[in-house]
Length: 338
Image (tube, rainbow, N blue to C red; front, side, top):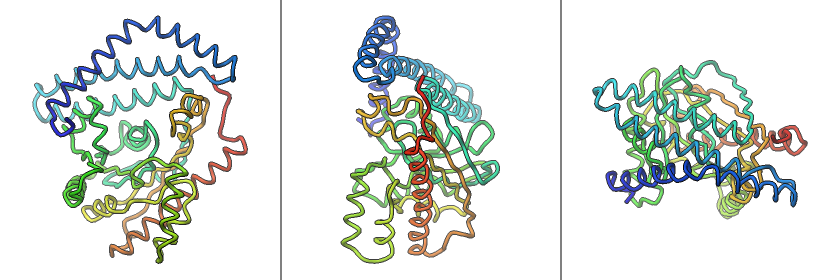
């Protein structure tokens, strides 16, 4: 179904509309049940009010999806040029809405540190992966309303979101099939995405390819210990993020001479597992975000040197995240949840 756009959208849009209608009609009852659940959990284990938050967030997300799909269906009648401009605008507003709803409902505060000025393009954004909202973070902290228009390398599974599906395929993006056996076709799609970046554009890729877990990190380190060479040695040094998967990033760097922006963050780990999320692991957190620029002249030209450069760059991300983790362990990264 994922490879058949018409069938896929008929299914996903129908599910979203039906869910939005049902949740809207049942919202008072759902909130009442959620309040009772949260009171019981508070008495038993002093956990934050997650049930109410999940109901409210889910309802607002579904409403935004329906509105976005309706607007995206209308704008093509205005002509191609205006349609593209409005689709970019709708994409930015959709991302900002979902990010702000998440931030407010779950009482999450974001603190940003940057060593670079405005993110002028063209740029290649190497962003740390995160649970749930990782694709929204570059929108908010790099694109914004005046930053570069961003293209994304996203996993194909995200096509299940109809608004992201419609806007994402109308605009230049690439949905990566991580299960494909034809890796060269996938890499060509990534190269093509980055080959014609304009002065006010950027392309985003998540070099880790998946969200961090200690189990994944340990497995990769154990495999690296059985090998030799500088990349194997570098792989064993990661502690707080996963080593990068270089193929996609190298494909982008082959296709463009743009500078690199690194986007790191710490604090979203409270959503890594369903059980952590349900326990309120994200509520009241302060999420630290760091952005820094790497000039193109700092990136080696030889492929083997670029692989090592990427690993060392991502070790800088690892060091930064590890430092935030130590601060958090000392009680500097958590506030009293609302």
